[in-house]
Length: 161
View 1 (cartoon, helix red, strand yellow):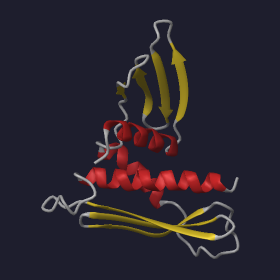
View 2 (view 1 turned 135 degrees about the vertical axis):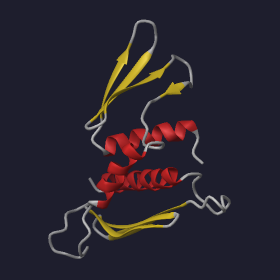
View 3 (view 1 turned 180 degrees about the vertical axis):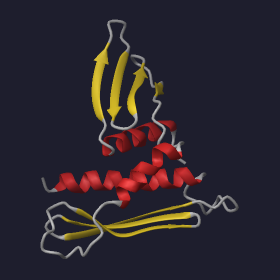
View 4 (view 1 turned 60 degrees about the vertical axis):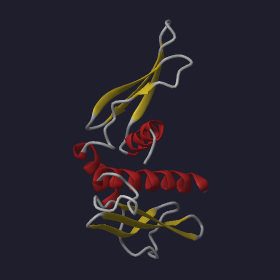
């Protein structure tokens, strides 16, 4: 299960994937404020005390279906057709398989970076067998796959630019 810091970092990554933009503010008292504005969700502030690891961030992708489902829908709308088509652009990601099953979420993708690269992401949750689950809740199962996919996608698309 991800730590609080990992959840915050993952939520920020998802917010950026959903079109979020940052603004940074530093007050004379030493308090730093990061603001992220996300279309559809609004504006959110992160507070971090100077020289402190204490973070608070009200992004709810990890805990709210209302927040998480548009992310899954956006991933699901990524191109699904023949990855070997002539109109393929450099660094374009193509979904090979997008499957939601009982207690699992599987995503398989291709990207052309001058050569074909493929990756897959799997999240599982079984309330009766938590040892075999990659997540502790259904929503965290989707969140973890989304964060892994977005992280990989960001790394791959920056690779050949």
